[in-house]
Image (tube, rainbow, N blue to C red):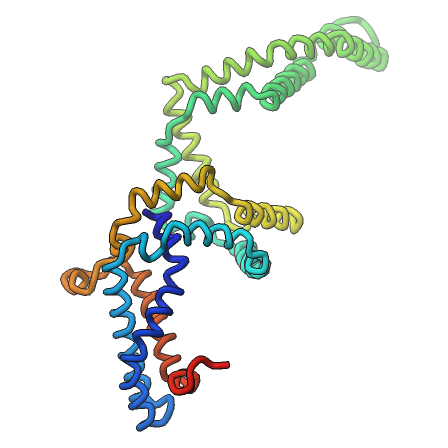
Length: 348
């Protein structure tokens, strides 16, 4: 229904304008008569045109509710609309410029925002994020794929090798053994350094070879640890702590990439939008029309006037859009361009 609604919305404006231009001839005389008696732009003329615009939108609303989705937007028109939308290179070039301008404004705002993410989200939303991060289920398949990947196994091998090396340096068994020999200090230091080099040369390759085969076993052990039921409370606490740290970071720190990185992200997102196409789009469209095509258009609209009068408004976005459209129509009906069009036909 949402997809059908989106397609219908794309063609609603032309349908509405066609109906409006036919209907406004019958409702506009009162607006025009008032405009003739009052100065253009007077409050009385504006009120009359606003009332006519409201009546026109009410008429359009009633008409739409009596139509089926298929009659407002036939399937053939929906297919042509999708095809033309993709093929309209001028339209996409214009949108690309607007997208770049909007991106730059948003990016500049994000880089200057020093408040923590949690403060921007609000206490209630931040609490929900923390709870979700703590309670979310861990997919064993994802954990296995991640931990047993070549990158993680190589990382584990590197960490283990570095740990063994640090242990040998800090425990210093060679130095402790040589320190017991009756040798003067400078000579003892030279012997210790030479012995360490020899041990590194002998043990280093053996350690690397051992870790090369043991990294997979270490990854297996890590997976078992992460998925163990006994460790679930620790992992939940760790996820919550990680989410808490992210929420406490200033937003500007999370988007503090280079200009090149920002440009790559912008172009990647735009390419995804531009090239987006649902798989089996034609079959999906047929399925949508088979399911919803004969439904009344009212399923895509908020409640009618009678229902709204009996309950609080439930579609503030729709009402706001309607108010904006009403004001645009009222301004046009009060303009000289409308009066000229009404008397002489379409403007040249």
